[in-house]
Length: 105
Image 1: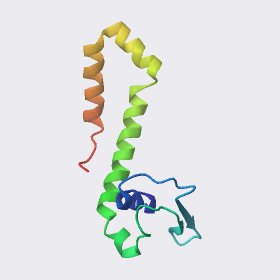
Image 2 (image 1 turned 180 degrees about the vertical axis):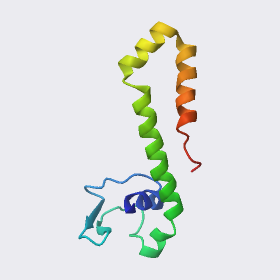
Image 3 (image 1 turned 60 degrees about the vertical axis):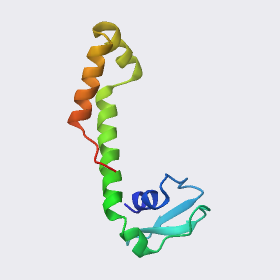
Image 4 (image 1 turned 45 degrees about the horizontal axis):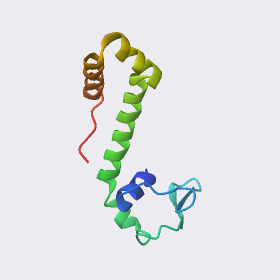
């Protein structure tokens, strides 16, 4: 979950191939290389302080993935709108969002 802590620390998702390189040698992931220029490399204590925010980011990513799965493809959504109308689609989207709520960030 170090990736989510880094996202919370930076306030954005960095390029994990160029800006922030993580490594796991079997004892947990750590920052191998820090090339993000907008903030200095965080300490372990700074990252640990972001555990709650990182958990929220993780849970919200799961909720979004579940929503996208239920929404279906764009083609199936267009078909839904064509067959049942825009208001029915909006109602369906809202029921999916209610089923998979995001936490407050």
